[in-house]
Amino acid sequence: MKIYEKAPAKINLLLDVIRKREDGYHEVEMIMTMVDLADRLEMEELPRDTIIISSQAGYIPLDEKNLAFQAAKLIKERYDVRKGVYIHLDKKIPVAAGLAGGSSDAAAALRGLNRLWGLQIPEDELCRLGAELGSDVPFCVTGGTALATGRGEKLEKIENPPGCWVVLAKPPINVSTADVYGKLRANEIGRHPSAANMLSAIRRGDFNDICAGLGNVLEDVTLKLYPEVLQLKESMQRLGADGVLMSGSGPTVFGLVSKEAKLARIYNGLRGFCKEVYVVRMLT
Ligand code: ATP
Figure 1: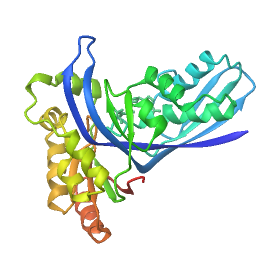
Figure 2: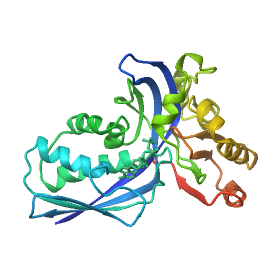
Figure 3: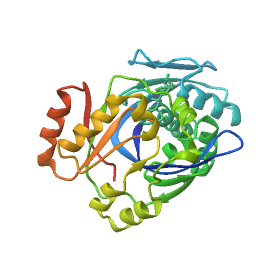
Figure 4: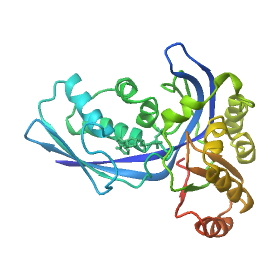
């Protein structure tokens, strides 16, 4: 039997760092949602007790470093599954882009293998397994929109923001999340975005207030290290996006746009100097 599972990209509408904890992790407050740019996982049971990963994308690891591999290994160990699986990753989400592509693949593997092997693992348990693989994985298991606290693994589901267009642009650089967090001085953050304001804007379905409340303290680090990300933000603003922010640790910048009529100008303007531009919908 073959099954398929979609792994959508996430964007952070808000990313705040409260403090650096004694265990080295950062205490964060994030509001995350998903967009309709997704990898697709094809999973097929193998009679032999092995995990095989393939992908059309030549630039991701296909061994135990791949997060989908790690998800399969974890579920096999915990639930004593003695069968194997072949997972093909059809990658559409740019890699190391701040869009949680790897985390979403891991979450999709957990959901898919739960179905493939009829394990009936409840969603909260899948989230706990996901937390062992990475801070963003539990959110990717549940999807939707959520407020994440702790190191990102404590989730509170909230309603989805109103539907809109999302323009994503990724400059040709790879940013390491660990490096950005490592360079962040948590006690020197100038302006913390307000999660309370963003939550209220989402609850009211107020698109303009959502755009006004966008904020990501990791911009402090990434924009200084990579001026091209700042340039991309400024261009998107100038071209008429309603709200613009860097996602995660970057380098992808996204723009929220309510009117379809604006999209061609924004897309064409960005494509003049940035090769990777995607126009998608917010998942609602
Ligand atoms: P986040 O926003 O959670 O920090 P990201 O979008 O910045 O994630 P990913 O695309 O998840 O970054 O990739 C980060 C690293 O993980 C890459 O360097 C890649 O080699 C590795 N990786 C492991 N598994 C995968 C996968 N299934 N897809 C993409 N990258 C993967």
